[in-house]
Image 1 (spheres, one colour):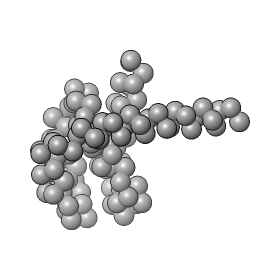
Image 2 (cartoon, helix red, strand yellow):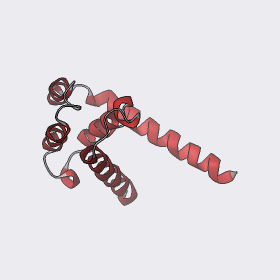
Image 3 (cartoon, one colour):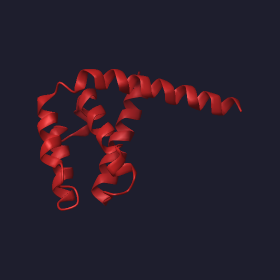
Length: 109
C-alpha cells in the first residue's frame, strides 16, 4: 500500500507544478491565437494541426521552453484528446514525445 500513497503524492506534486506553470502561461498571445486557429480543425486536418503545434514548439522539442511544453501537454491532455474523440498517430506521437521530454527534464534536476 505504501507504493500507492507514494504514487498519489507524486501525482499531486506534478499537478501542483503544472498548475503553477499554467497560471503564468495563459498570457502567451501566440498560444491563444494558435488555439483559436486549431479549433474545429482537428477532425478535418489533424496532420496540419500537429505541424502547427510543432511549429509553436519551435520545431525542436528538446530546446523548447518549459512553459510551451506545459501548454501543449495540457492541451493534448484535454477531454477531446484523452476521450478519444480526436485520435490520430501524429497526436499520440507528439503527446508521447512531450511527455518523455518533460520527464527527462525533471530527472535532470
